[in-house]
Image (tube, rainbow, N blue to C red; front, side, top):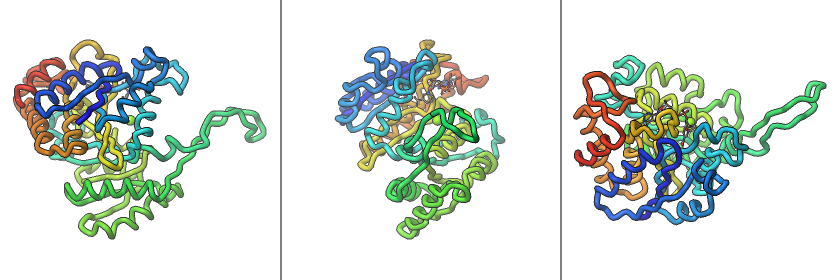
Length: 354
Ligand code: NAI
Ligand code: MG
């Protein structure tokens, strides 16, 4: 069981240290090796996804990632930006399925900005296609062209999906729904975009293979509204790369706690990259106050999806629930009456709960 560990930038190394401690404490004999990705890799090698990291990531069964990026790299050309490292590893490993659960823990009910009755008991899963769509489509660029009789800058991107790309992400959503409440809502913009008409057609063609799962469709603008109006109507939502980027961030905020939200990105064989949904939080980096729970919960998803260690996954998730019940809180989820702790103390509490 080989794990490639990529702490990354900002708070990445701080939160990763706690997740690694938790994995070691399970005593399951993981082989963990660290490498550089993102801004730290740019500084050391000139590129955000260096060869050595590529080799390690490709040889591993799973990749555990902290976060990448920060203001000190914002001025770099696009090709050298830390985010390119992230896009590069997702693409190279064929990680086409991004799974983002949004769960509201009862102890954190006040963290949400929505009314308690709207979000109490929320447990939804967003399945986002990750390797296609307008984020990767060619041609793309910014060029000077003659348009409307004048020479001006022209920006363009291309949206496309093949039916096989839609089918494989559709299957991930249907399979995930089978382990949950058997409902899939497919999100598109078929009234305007042909690519997403194809998306809807393919989802409808798949549905008969999953007669035990209810398939519905929703236009993306309505889905954005419904997510804040009545989010508990959803079980699994499946959508393309761009809509999924936006809707998964929206869904995560229903819980109000960015520091609590894990994610998994899977290939066709359940090799996966696991990372918290948040970024590198440069504003609190180096202060020892970041919440490590999203990274620890990402490690739990790794146990579940890549290593098929459901019991160990539940042990870790149970330990996280326990520390919340015990009142331990990092700054991002703190409220009066609870115990404010730093990154390492939170890790200690999880280890003790384990
Ligand atoms: P961010 O998620 O890093 O931070 C947003 C806010 O949430 C900040 O106030 C931060 O302090 C707080 N926060 C985030 N994670 C936290 C944690 N674990 N504990 C406590 N507080 C936490 O998003 P932002 O500020 O938009 O981006 C910062 C950098 O991170 C940028 O360079 C961005 O490109 C990068 N980024 C990287 C991602 C990744 O590696 N997957 C995802 C999103 C952003
Ligand atoms: Mg995003």
